[in-house]
Image 1 (cartoon, rainbow, N blue to C red):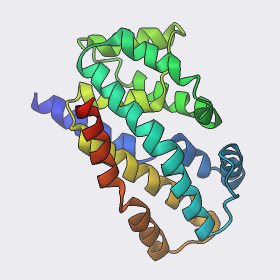
Image 2 (image 1 turned 120 degrees about the vertical axis):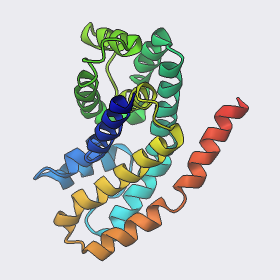
Image 3 (image 1 turned 180 degrees about the vertical axis):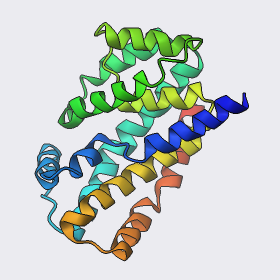
Image 4 (image 1 turned 135 degrees about the horizontal axis):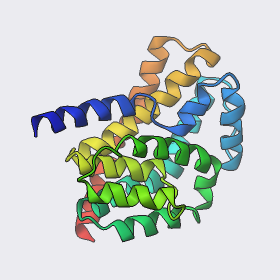
Length: 214
């Protein structure tokens, strides 16, 4: 049990380091072009300086993170914790119908499938093996948010901390990936992070409370 707990914490820390597929795109040499395409799909102004990056991230949080990504993580966590593989696969399939997620669907699935394969050695985890089989056979896509929720459940990591950790690390990933291209100082990055993350704990508590009420 101790070894599994240590492995879980190690995996989670490693995974969250460069977690979000959009942040991954930002880190490329044409990162602002990639970010521009995402901005266009969300009908946002292009990112070219710190104020426009702040606006992009506020809109990302409002349009993607809070209404789509965090609820997807929460729902996947619930299905995995209850060993509801069929429901997890059906939910995976349904995400393909979300227009706002299409801008980074391929990146999300690439990241998710890569992380899911790291769980393959967990032979005794039936939900992991069956979800892997569904992805390998093309019945599921392996969205990164669903694999993240699955991982939290498999390793018994607290959902509340997992949601907040995802929100913090993805926001930080965006900021620091853009910092070099926008010539941002460490102080500017930290201030932007503190401002953008100030309301996240309250939003996550509301999400968890809504699920309990339902």
